[in-house]
Image 1 (spheres, rainbow, N blue to C red):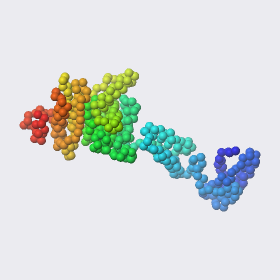
Image 2: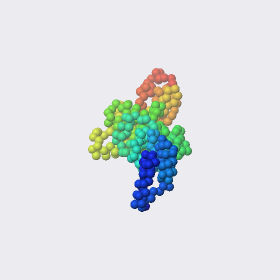
Image 3: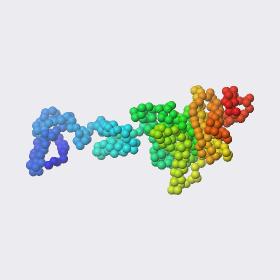
Image 4: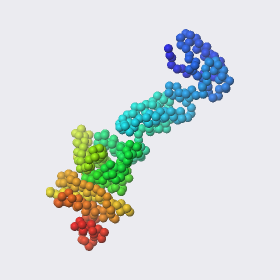
Length: 427
Ligand SMILES: [Zn+2]
């Protein structure tokens, strides 16, 4: 028969020890239980004189230990250095997390493991001891996350999105740089290269994948928001969202709507990008635009039916930026350019849409230009060329650069000499 382990505390006096032995003996005789002295130890506080320790050890016929070690998984000696005493908990959590084959686990299963196993490790000691706050933070910090600091405004928007949880979660991961981009997979030694599998030109960061890769520019440009992504001014994905909201001359409801559309677009870019990499097929901006528009419309319609959202159907950001359809038998070619001062590099984007606003074709790519007006004029030329290449004759070219348009329309004498060859080609 076994009884639970017992801890007995005594003042270190020989007489006390003898009294205890006198109490234990009749108890053992009466109950039939035995004290296993070979498995029991004595521990003395540091100020107990050596001769007393020896004498007491003799009374009990037990050996003395310097460190009583752990009892039921907890340290018996709990000094002032709590963090040091709790070191073993951190080590155990780390051991568990490192043991998992992380690359084989999906994000969801990883989270479940963290919650079910790693966070359960300190449960028992936490019931008994008051943990120092630093220790608590450290243990919770073991959950997968990055140290990116994101504007609280963005967080508020992400969690108030008009989007299903999977899309909110996706946007959150994009903002925290937790997506399985080539760059991230390369850093974790899961992928052999960090280069974008679609353009094979640049490192695939979150920003490259969702905003900057050559095939996504027409998606932003041709989508509901008519967004022009300026390659040279983008630092992070979070910054793009912040500037987008900052530029909106509208209410919080509109910023929520805009970010929701951005989130839907990003989600469909991601979905399509994964499909393209798996199936080695050609990227189609058209599909991403159409699918994200349908998905957003369906979601908001469902919400209106549920009486969650009470407001008119979505409108474009501002009337000045709203896309107007061309007249019958024509297609509209929207062109745009961004230019980087000092480096003489630019990028141009072209998108062609029909009367009903449906996407017909589009592309974007880098070019050389010595000024913004040159880049904008080049974009107009590229728009013409692209329309001709697509076999389209009745086209209306639309540019947001008034200067470029007036250069094309103006008298040849007043045009700048740098633009002359370009304008000549356009004519
Ligand atoms: Zn790319």
